[in-house]
Length: 177
Image (cartoon, rainbow, N blue to C red; front, top):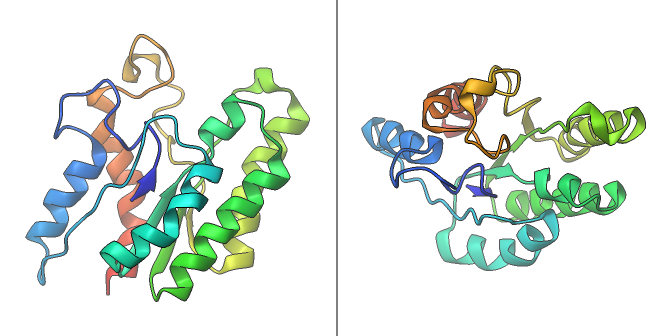
C-alpha cells in the first residue's frame, strides 16, 4: 500500500484504518497474504515516485495499491506532473512483477470545474495507459457524508474505514489470484 494520510491512519486509533482491516482480511485468506502499509501522511505522487523503487526491492510485492494524488490537488500541483508520477509508480510496480490497483480521487468543486474534471480524469487515463485496475473514486459513499469525517473535514473517521475497504476490495481481490 503506497498512500497518504487517508491510508496512514491519520487521526485514527492505531489498527483501526482500512489498510489494517485489509491486512486482517488478507491474513485470513488461504493462502494468507501479508499487507505492507508504506503510506505517509502528507505524501504526494512525487514522494511516492521517489520511494517506489526501494519499497519494491525491499518488499517484492505481488500487488501494489496506489492511493496518492489528493495532496497534489490540495497543493494545486501541476496535473501533468501528478499524472506522470502515477504512471511512473505503476510502471515500476509492473516492471517488478506486481499487479497494480490505482485508487482514484476527486476534489471538491471549489477548485473550479476544469481542474476538478481534469483531476478526476487523470486517474482513468493512467489506469488505461498503464493497464492497471482502478477504483474510480476511493471515497465513494464517504465524501458526501459529513458524519464520516474527522473535524478537519478532510480525513475520514473510524466509522468510514469499513466503507473504504469495501470500495477497494472488489477491485483488489481479483489481483490476488
